[in-house]
Image 1 (spheres, rainbow, N blue to C red):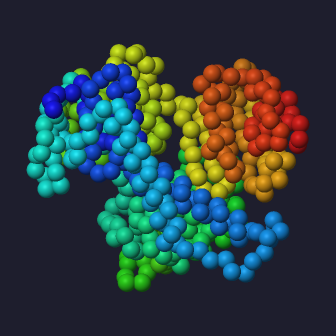
Image 2 (image 1 turned 135 degrees about the vertical axis):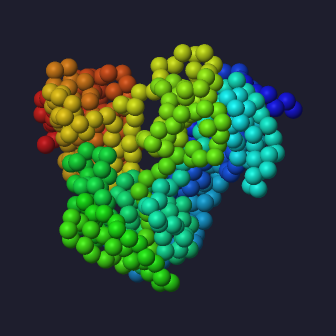
Length: 465
């Protein structure tokens, strides 16, 4: 088979495989170079297996609160190895599904690590660094993904100091865990392990947990988790980490106040960095800045014919962003004239319980941007459906342009927040106004009624509060 293609994609993660499928559907001859499992970190070590574990935590939480529902038992047990194995099976199935899609679309999958040797050629290397193949194409998409960012001078050992991948496959529940970083990854693992009995301490350098979220949402979630027994230290910097055979010791400082934390394990969840090293960027002349490949809104690099998507182009490091970048990129290559990426309207989701989801501007960003705004809120304590299903924590908050009623931002803290946020995403895309949302009839009883009520609250007043 010829090694000449219309499009070569380096990396088979949620950006790479989506771009490959989109390109194939446009009639391009496509090859994907992937050194590991198709689906990338997301399907194999991130988004999908973590959601499987979090569902286990939700079930466990329900069982712990079973008395409220009229159930009683005295022999609750769990098999942690089986919980972990189920999450791995879910990941395996997802990866096999991507393999099927590659075959269905006649996309050539080349095993190995891809490295640019010039602007149209990719050398394929095996684990020993030996070249096993040579591919050429007029269009190359770099989608090599990312990896867990570590603190300077700290190395994960998989036992005492963990990455998120390590935390997915622990053989037993640790008695205690310090989680460094209170972003989505840190908060999801905090919820999971705390639900199964681990003593959790969260350390965050910034002033609030989930620092990218609206402050009101972050503060509400913090109150819920502190009431549940988690220790949360914000505005706190890690100064050193030491380990021995049985524990980890972390020196932290909150201003001038210094203390030592001790735990069985420490999860470092301080973000992601793109895999841009040793993939031939220098040979091809591709420019980078601050550890990320520089691209325009169509995902072009500075070199004609070379594009980049996903974690390698920097924040936000989200699978659904990478996938949409892949679609935009493939459409551009195929001459379909896409609109280009708009990073003002992507949903951010955290899948702990209660869940957090948002889109657009926070209240602080809207005010700092000089917008004249109206804000509507509706608490789930006032939702009949939320009371019926026992999920009363949280609220919906919507930020509108005061003059035109345009949605500037929406923020949800609640049990199904990550599903509900799609309505506000569609509203932003269609430039819907508050009147259009408020006069869309929402089924009763549903959690989604809270979005209608919050919209009413901003301009006219909610009905049920």
